[in-house]
Image 1 (tube, rainbow, N blue to C red):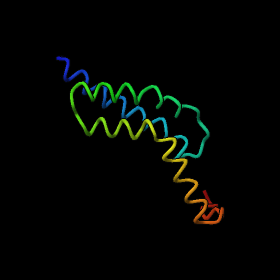
Image 2: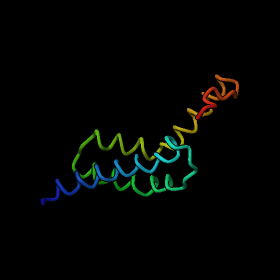
Image 3: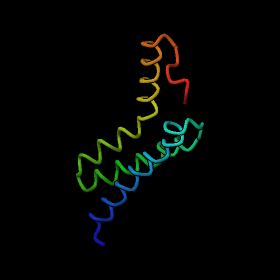
Length: 91
């Protein structure tokens, strides 16, 4: 495997793993601390994607790096719009 393919696989693996650690928190509503791994994996993915100059992987890994802040901001906006009422009580 040449270096370009190795870095591409590393960046994609970093992205997939960064997305997958959010699944327990978002889908299953289980407070899992594994999302903290995104602060380690995403910079590795950004660096690997930058070395092969794949801009889509750079942007997607950067979004995963800031995913906690994006989700927190979105949660606050939804809470503000709904006045703190939980409309999904059945879940």
